[in-house]
Image (tube, rainbow, N blue to C red; front, side, top):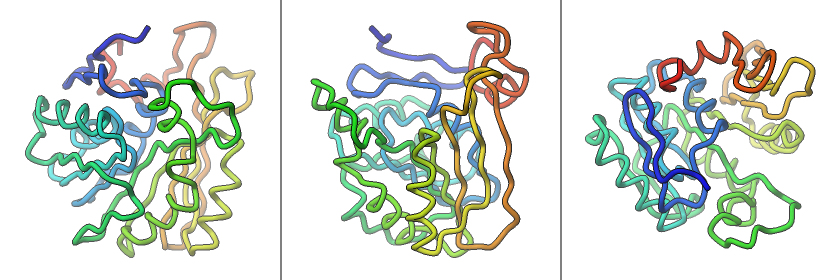
Length: 236
């Protein structure tokens, strides 16, 4: 059973209410997403608020909105934001992306979305909603992004590697261009398990990189992974 809280270097994430607990995917996206120069950031499906908190730590000025359709996730994010050093810049929003109508466009949009398209539904309804695309399909995610992203803004998303082509095709259809790919491998000998993708409306040369999490055994983390996450994990 997961702990009711997870402690990072500069904040604590309470997770007793949220269906989806702190995990590697959220930490990777929060540490990797390009925050430089972003004034307004949107976190779609914020859950505990982890990614929004990480972005607030990395960018000292951005206003960050974090939306979640699940009431308990919203309540959890609200608690975590209020207990953080950046509570004045973090706003939890209870609602769905499809009907969300902000007054501004965002410089950066991030999402660790539900991704189990065809897997057997989890018996826990809350966890199933957080993990399955029924509540937010990739099409609806991309529609929400193009509606809310500024002309020079960036959209970053973490997905299972085998889902990359699906969202890439949808994004391309809606004129979002893939600018950056980070392929995440659990170990050197294994195929990428996750990808982090960066899209924008701007044509740029595609950048492709690889990140290995563990090198020689369980908890033997690569230097690249340590460098990426050292501002957050207590162990590094």
